[in-house]
Image: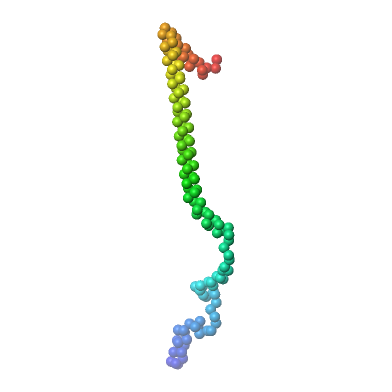
Length: 129
């Protein structure tokens, strides 16, 4: 009886999987590496890809220089247009100041009436009647 008990304990301690000669299925071998991909066929390089891979890196500095020149010229145009508009406004202001001075000095006795005429004309522009 002791011999059979030792035999039973020896078979219990060894797993059944080791005793069988069945192959391991993919269900049990989940950590196995996937099969390698098929080898790629060597193809001749695409002429369009080769053309653009050579052309585009050379175009980057040209694009940057062109953008910088365009933006600087646009800024120069904007500043010159602003300067021209302010010069015209200063000329118009000088003309109006000269006109006011001429009207004020034109009649020394009628200075009050000229100012009143300007004030009355200024008030009358918003009236509809």
